[in-house]
Image (cartoon, rainbow, N blue to C red; front, side, top):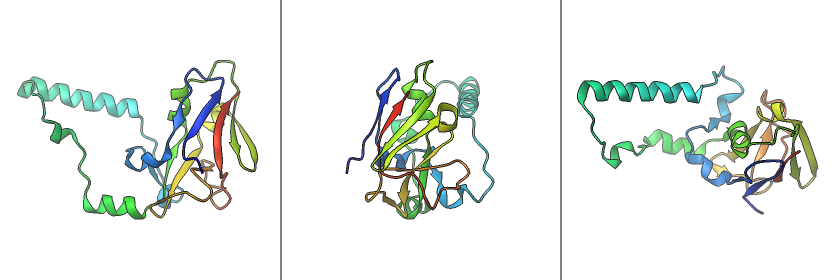
Length: 168
C-alpha cells in the first residue's frame, strides 16, 4: 500500500501528503474526544500575531537576544509521548487544500479510493477530517487515511483506501 497521497487536477501546486509524519504535527486532533467534547476552532493567524506581539514586547523590555536552538525545540512530556503511542488522531483537510491552491474555476474535490470516487464541493471538503492513526498505529490495512465528516456521523463507516485527491 502506498502511504503518499498526491493532489491532481486543477491546482497550482501538485502537493503530496504523507500522513505518517502527522503524529508530530501540532495541528493534529485527538479523535477520541473531538466529536464528543465541545471544541473551539483556533485561528492560527491570530495565535501567530499574539506570539509575535509577545516576542516583540519581550525584546523591547529585555533587549534582543538570539535564543539557543535547544530552547526552540519542542519538549514532549511523558504523558504526551504516551498519548502519541496510544492515541487516535486526525488532521483537518483545509490547510492542505489551501496549500495546493485550487484554480478559481475548480468547484469540487474528488477522493479516489479502491471502491470508487467520492466527490465534495470545495467548501464542504475543507471541513473534512483525515484520520491517520488508530490506537497509536498508522492505518495500514485500509489507509493511509480515513475521511471523516466534520460532525463525525460516518466515524463507523469512513471513506477508506484513499489513493489520490483530484480537484476539478
